[in-house]
Length: 115
Image (cartoon, rainbow, N blue to C red; front, side):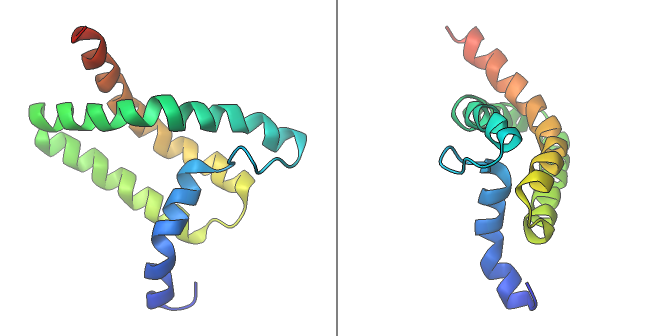
């Protein structure tokens, strides 16, 4: 990423890559392969709960929700542009997942209370 135009063009791909690697077909070393089930679990089960939790949290506390989302988006954008290694990406993604876990908890709570 050498110019602003290239950075803006790469940002969507970088964010998706940052949040979803290693993908199931990206089997590599043994340790990288061990991370695939965790990433799959987040992608299939937790991210939908995060989105539901964001909607519920926004209705209850819009300012706090906006602050947490801005912090998360800023970290995702920064890491998406500067990380070039799956191992480093995996380790830095934990910081984002810690914030998203709050929203996932809200989403999980409301999903269970609606039943």
